[in-house]
Length: 437
Image (tube, rainbow, N blue to C red; front, top):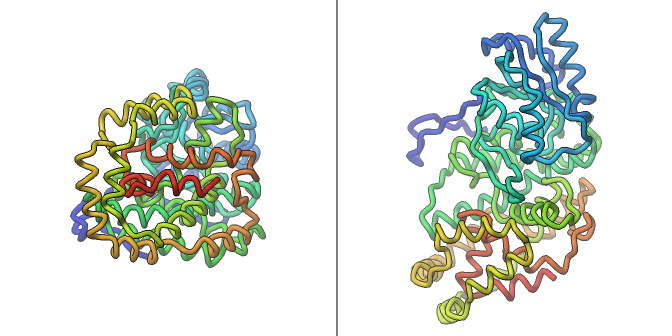
């Protein structure tokens, strides 16, 4: 596997990460007392929910008691908790200030909330993973719903990640599918990272990108064993997800692990928060977004850039009209996206012309990047079939008539150059989006 050097990388960045130890294997949860002592902690605050308590929390309690390590424990009394102000507030109301370590037992929501608690309380943080379901284990951010908007809040990395394969492989099948779905996103994210470097001069590291490619190959090679709960398959997916979080820390950005495919999921989550629409797990939504993104990139390869068309489209574009449409689609959560544009000015006609010239000059290279990084949609469909993963929004209760506006809204979520921004620059966004309906 590619070794990421802390200093001396050809990209020029110092690659640092606060994760000190990643322990993956069978039975490794038994190493928990040893790792707590290494951190100099004496009393952990254990956080889990009713599901993760059954999966591993009760085992953790037994291990701590046998080792003579005192602890406080809070079990969120819900089958499903949202990563939002209510959940964070409830955890802080039950937080024991005599504790000197936050010990999460869970995956996505538990991890995200635990990071916030550890950051605010200024304590060490470690996690015992319960599912290979998402790539946020090693990241220095928490994906949260704040004021109804999906945001990534800066938090601390865990010092220690424990992935016991005997625990991980017992996760619900939906979470196993979700983990591989989150890994498949890296095909799109790596392509968009390279395209953004080419067109808008973003930082890029080839070593980090190659690390992600190696993890993708391992996950794909072991996909058939995932639903059979084979040790090698579960370990490959979990290893890939942890490496993705490390890659984001090394790069100091989310580029190695997420692109437009993630923003399909974010939009669906926002609709669920605002209007009560259906949604699924993050990774399954991302898998569907990855498949639709790959189809759009295939269509893009048939295009010949037309400067006149790009300029005419921007001249006809009404930012106020679009923001009104966006507000109707996403409700109050659209306001944060509108405020973001006031800061970044992505719709400015003059900077658009500069980008459009670069697109035309580098079109052959853009096509080469797509070919090198993104499998065909047919190949991705076959891979999703191997794990019995949904491939259409309707399979998870999402109205497919909303796909065109969903895709157009993805360009407004973050200050990140992704496929819909490229299509907007080319004057092709509306017609490409309409092909999704």
